[in-house]
Image (cartoon, rainbow, N blue to C red):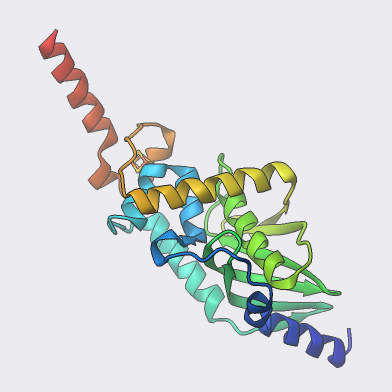
Length: 227
Ligand code: SF4
């Protein structure tokens, strides 16, 4: 890739917002209807966690969230760079008028005119698809800005130093679009989802305010007393 190609790719990449404006769709979103892309990750992990963080603003750090914050700060503070034929664009804001999404991509790789979002995670690959959903939402916004398909992306796991390729297939896209609407409903209704105690609660930073196991025990003891 010569300098001209790189220049074109930079122009394209920095022109994302302009392209969005040119492709504006009909729907207008109010501020409270706009869905932060990171909220999709929280919601698909646990709707109640999403409520605490994005509605009641009770985000609490633990060692996992702090490590994640430090990782993202480091990634976002690095400058754009070139690795071989790949242009690496860091910390790019994303917006989708079609889906009412706002967010930021940790990294967008551009190679031969193909754009791929890369999401950084501090831990290892988890058992749930919340990271894939977040990546897919980034791709939906990117596609809208570019006017071209983004068929895959990557999740980089800092703990293992490996990255996983994610195919953004129809099934994942449909799930992501459904979740965008679910999150929007949560943000607008501001109604708190029930606490469901399970394996996801282990390591959840909002456990101290949610107390799902304690609430469950209390409910059982009240119902025994009533019997
Ligand atoms: S503690 Fe469990 S139920 Fe409560 S928000 Fe976290 S994951 Fe959800």
